[in-house]
Length: 309
Image (cartoon, rainbow, N blue to C red):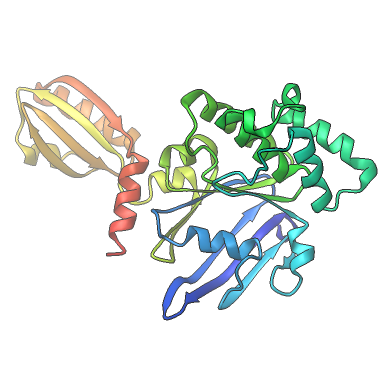
């Protein structure tokens, strides 16, 4: 439904001098989605984020946040947005509490509501016990949590994170991922990243850009299977001829890997697995190994990017 669309990017284009940074980018993000804005460095992700946040005025197209045109009504639209850039915008000589109060004030949270808003984000982000500590004395992981807290203190409809786990250790990464899922219970989340594992671990939607153009938009599972089809790894003894494997009903292609091993492409995995077993029994093949290989996100990413060259 249209009222569930929190972010709508419609035929967005932008040019820096003579070079186009974005060309005709369109996508929607709905309420409670965690959407990954995915692409290699220099793909146009930062330009998209800057336009959504009202930092850059687009050359063409339209961006709406919570139904508000960002270009026509920038202040109204920005009130619905929380943003955490790649490097948290913190003041080292502030305490956590002082900094969050400052963030709430510039986000126009009413004075009487600021204490409650601070308590809520301190609790959610797991930093209540650091509220009196100077930001300069926090570790990188906790500085990131403070950055997240400032982005959500005014309860925005849309929260945008630029590389939210950059530079964190594995334990900190897991903590931030859990936090992003909790935030998505009340807000829509857009994460800009070039790291596939982040998208796979957190997001349910993906928008992929490369060279300023949208080359994929859809669910994470659709992305995973969009270009590189699943395959079956098969090891058979005695080794049959490749033509015999290719002739099995449901097999759309096969590659001989040597020593009785094959990589089999297929249409329906349930049907083709049953057919392979039946053919093996009828021909006296011994199935030493058989299993479905799911295409990795890295392979899909590489295939999608290759299309642009």
